[in-house]
Image (cartoon, rainbow, N blue to C red; front, side, top):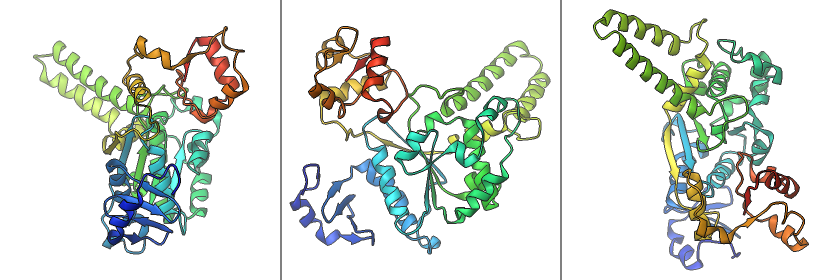
Length: 365
C-alpha cells in the first residue's frame, strides 16, 4: 500500500465478500469503497452518491431498460479541495474504458486539458470575432461544421456530458450547446438531445471575461421579473388589465424563443440550470491542514482571513520578491495559492504569481 492509500488492509479484508469487479481492473464495494490492485481509495459519502448515480448507467449501455436513468441535468458543486476533479476523473474512467461515452467540455484550454476534453468554442465552431455579435442576435446559428464534427465523433454513443467550471460558462453558451446536441440527436425538445449532463463547479468565482456567470444570469432574470411585477403593481394597482398586458409581454419576451427574442439562448440556459438536481461535496479531501481549510472556507464564504491567522502565510511584496532560496522555489511547486483571480493553479507559474503579488500585495500560500 502507498502513503496516500486511505483504505486499510483490515477494511479491505472485511469487505471482501462485498466485492464486485466491473471489468475495469477496479473493485467497487457496496459501501462506496474503490480498490485497485496496487492502490485503494475510500470514497466519502458525497463522492460515492455521485459515482453510484452514473456507474450502472455507464457500464450497461446495451441494457438501458435494466438500469435507473440518471437525472437529465445535475449540478456538482462544492468548495475547493472537496473532490470535484476526482469524481470527474472516476466517471471518465468508468465511461471511457471501452469506447468514448463520457464527453467533457470546459471554457478554456487549461481546464479542458485537465479533464481530457474540448473547449466549448471548439465544439461550437465559433470564431472569436463572433463574440461581439452574440448580444445582437436572437439565437446563435448552429454551425453546420459543428454538427458534422459531432456526428463524425459518433455523438450517438455519448452517454454523459460533463461541463467543468460551469461558473465560467454563460447561460447563452449553455443554451447553444444544448441546441447543438439536440440537432445532432434529432431530439429538439430535450435538453442536450436527451443526453444526461453533469455541470461541475461553483458560483463563488469571478465572472468570465465578456459575460455573466451562468447562475448570475439566472438570478438576474428572476430578480428583474420580480422588480417589474412590483413596480407595475405599485403604479397600476387599480388597473388589472394593464398588469395583465405587461405580464403577457414579459412572458413573450423572456420565455418564448421566437425570432425576435434576444434572450432565447440565455433563456434556454437558465431553464437548464433551473432544472438541475444538486449534489454538494462538503468533506475537505485536498488539504490535511485544519487551520488552512478554515481559512479557505472563510474566503469561499466571502469573509477575510482573521488577522491572527496570517502567521501561517507568507506575504510577497517588494521586500521579499527576490529573497527566495532555491529550496523555497521548489516548495512553491507543491503549494496551494490564494489569489484574487479565477485562474486555475496550473495556470499560475512562479514568476507570474510573484509579478501578480508585487503589483497587488496579494497573499500567496
